[in-house]
Amino acid sequence: MNINTRQENNIFTIEINRPESLNALNGQTLQEINEAVSHAEENPEIRVIIITGSGEKSFVAGADIKEFSDYNADQAEEMSRKGHINVFDKIENLKKPVIAAINGFALGGGLELAMACHIRYASETARLGLPEVTLGLIPGYGGTQRLPKLVGKGIANEIIFSAKMIPAQRAKEIGLVNDVFPLAELMDKTKELASTISKNSPLAITEAIAAVNASYSENGFEKEIKSFGKLFELEDKEEGVAAFMEKRKPNF
Image (tube, rainbow, N blue to C red; front, side, top):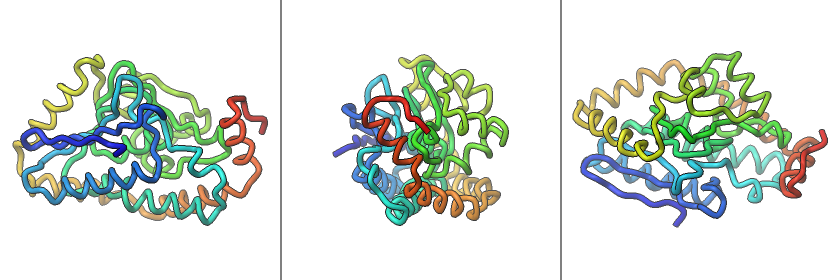
């Protein structure tokens, strides 16, 4: 198992647990998240879901690049589409609120996972970013669509184009995370919020989620999926991934 789950009263926590890869997302992990989220949604005793990473260093450090480094365009597009349907869109449109407790690095697919959640709390040690362009790629799990809605187009472009990591406090300033706490307090503060939410009407919250999400357009996500797949057959992706594997800077 690549995740740990636990239920405390009405709160269900999903902890991504791949410490050897800084909790990077591979296909198996995404499938386990899908199954855990489905279980939580169907269990009437569960009111709120928390997603976090194991350890003190990383929430999710990205997608597992080794798993898709040799994909062609069709395979990459299918990976992106499957991820959207089974995990990222599913979380965003879940009938129950999902809170991300970002305990460390949230990069690439990790930041995309956090952005799919309805609320984001972060530790003071967290670092967030979308480094895909350093690989000759773009975010493929909703990053180009959710980030502008959270922080505005200009700041989103800066984050995506520069591939820089931003500290937690800056993420709070731009609206990427709701609040920031010392690492030792992060889970307690997240559970406090979850407990407060769990006391409110679950039917009303379900409708509130749907109403807030109604402003989103599916067209942008489709464009992202197509572009993500296309880049897998261009030379920049080959150089970017090779450089990552060889632990050197890419030469685009």
